[in-house]
Each structure stands twice: as C-alpha cells, then as structure tokens.
Image (cartoon, rainbow over all chains, first blue to last red; front, side):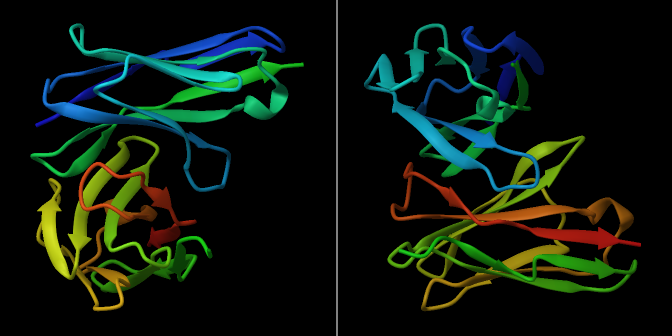
Length: 112
Length: 113
C-alpha cells in the first residue's frame, strides 16, 4: 500500500520567515496530493492541493510543488504569521486504493 | 452550504460496550470517508462509502464497521470497545467518487475507560 513520510515533525520559524514542509510517497500511481491544516481542537482544513499533471500551484502565501520522478511534494508558506501556527498534514491519494494516506504531521510554530 | 456535521461530539464508554457515530456530509456529496486520529498513529483511514457501498477499508479489525444511507449520511460502529479505541473519529465528505477534495467534520472524541 501507499506510505507517506513527512518531515520535519516540528518546525519553529520567526514571523515573516518562510516555512517548508516535505513529504515523500511510495506509490507512483498516486495522483492527488492535498495539504491540511489542523489548529488545536479543530478539524483538518484543506488549504491547497495538487494533481499529478501539475508541477506547482500557488494560492497567495501558500504554494505546493510536486516532483513525480522523485515522488516527493512540498508545502511552502511565505511571510509566515502567528495564525499559521498549527499542525500540517500532507496526504497522497491513489485511485486503485481509493483512499487518502496521510503523513505523520508537522507542528509549525510561528514566533512573533 | 452547511459543512460536514458529526454527532455526538463527545462520548465516554467503558470497555466491552459498543458505540455508533454519525456523519452527515455536505449536501450533494455522495462519498463519506472515516478516519481515526490518535497522537501516536496520526490520521488513519478506516473506510469509505459511496452510494451506500463500502469501496475500501483500512487496516482495522472487524469490530469497526460502517454503513451509508440513501441520503448519504453515514454511521460507523465499534463493537467490544477497547482502551486503545480512544481517539478522535473524523469523517470527511467528497463530491467525487475518487480523488476529490475531502472536507472534514469536527469529529467525535471517544474516550474508552
């Protein structure tokens, strides 16, 4: 089955700096890669996603890149703000399995 | 549109009991997936239903089961509860059968004593 590794598990940055979270996946058939943000005590929220036919996608301060050859994808947050502090999860979807497999999560702390 | 709702939000049960959790998807969404979230294991896939059919099941024992109704609402049941079943149970709904954006409900916090 699919296996998703996420690094780092914790990330502390100064407000205004950039943050990068990386994920690798094992199944080359995976074709959809969402990212979720989960604040303490709240539900995971979809913040951005990318499909396998696209290499990069941006939405304001957030961007995701995908390298299908290397089987890894990354989340980039620029100009971080304290409200970006949360746990971020990457995930990979494979049609054959019809399920999302999640990475272990990254706790991002943005210090004011 | 209203978001995904789950009931109850909190539940305390004792070992050996059974529990049923409910999930109402976003209107028009026909796919409902269930996940277990624990500090140690993260987010793990339980099963997914589309049009009242279970399409896939994760690596959980048979004590975990589910169903989906014709209005797309879904329930999951856990029988013979164990202490290790204590977790946040999240459901997510999707418009598409495969590879669609999944939107999560607030979860049901189950504590087994």
